[in-house]
Image (cartoon, rainbow, N blue to C red; front, side, top):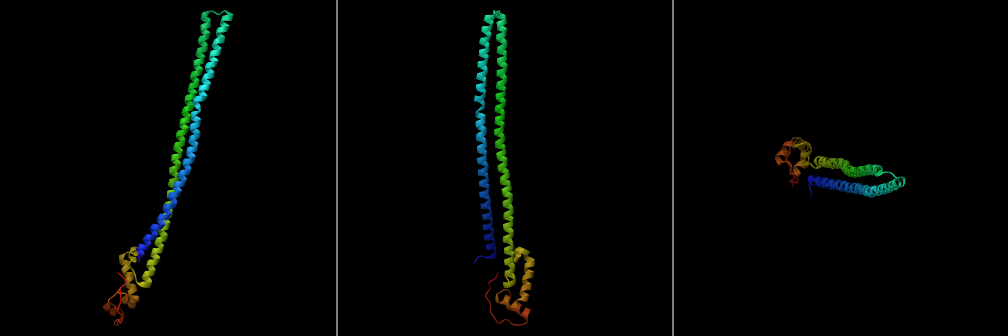
Length: 227
């Protein structure tokens, strides 16, 4: 038959196992939910980032086409109006400079858009990691509270059982864990003084100790069931 201490330890292990399993499963479920949301957001962000280069390349192509049209028109106008080669070249240079300026500005905007997209993806990763840590911390804090609650419940049961065994059966072994050796011994001695017949029959006191307590000789033998 298991001792009271062994039963208490078993109850405590079972309670702790139940609490830990519950919150382990909750941690897994929360982590899976956060990961699914993160993957969805990251997929959208990556798709947006992937569309940047084609968008700006289309604009660059349109800009180049516009420049080429303007350059040809300028050549035709120069031929029709009889502009000199120097003036015509100046027009060509002005068109080219404007094109290069517009092209450089466009590529600068593209670089800014790329940086913004990369920053958004980095922010998503940071937010995901932070949310994961926070969720697990909050969950584990609740776990700790439940573990303490379970322990206190089991401890209350243990102390009630120990007191019952001491009061009804004179078993004070478990009382040492609750009150300490000195007080447990004192409680044991008080109980023996109040219950000498049971104490003698259970082997807690000798025949001489029984005589000293009761001023009479014992008439029954005993079979010890105590330490």
